[in-house]
Image (cartoon, rainbow, N blue to C red; front, top):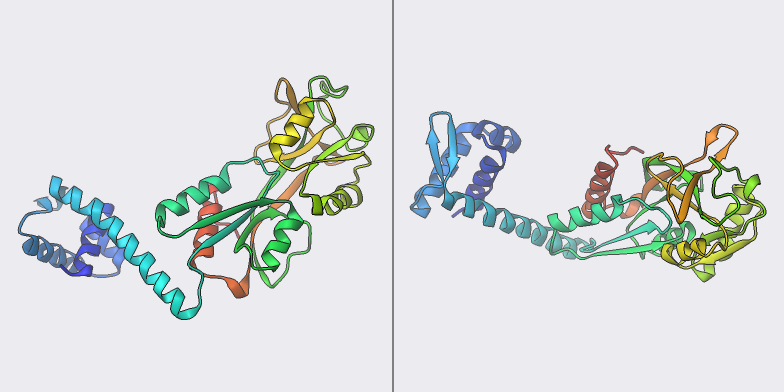
Length: 299
């Protein structure tokens, strides 16, 4: 069996058509048909039942296509890993993501990437904006999903993914629990709970105080779960951001829109990676992540 024969057969099964398979492979339809017939002749049994211009896949063909598709993926990973060793490329993927973003998209993108490349290890690290930024500068992560706090750098690929709506979470026992919306000024008398590692507390405090204008006392949690427990205990409010604009939600913990003069506040979220360290794995993951947000991103 030749590798081309297997590739062409899998393309036909996936496309459900010789014509569409040929278009995707950038070859003639007759070339695809000849390769599939040659594969069947070598195997000694039919993979397809042909009915004029259409076909059905035989049970043997379904098994062959399923197993062959997995082998082709492994061969592609093997080729890339060997090429990576030869050229000093990465053969693993390290993803950094913002620890206070609540959406499902990063986890879904990691799952989809691993399904495509089961033999390529993926490491995911959650952290604050500055923690992630310094991890990338040290080459400890390959690609980031984070909010924008700095001017976009030409040294990075910057793919805008969404604008996140800003909310605060408060306990039902909080004096502001029944507000329809809240401003930073209205929260000044309540402690603000931020998620940050110990060495990033000052950075987060300065950002929320000096850039966003919070005048609250600041308390710190190490994880979203710890922060939520602090909210549930009515120790203060916690800023959160979501992809969807949902309005006031929750029971024991209530989520209330955070607003300014122009309406509900928003943050920009990007996928970032250094241009000089771009590789196929990073670019493919970024494409998958952009797809989770309903688009292909953009610089």
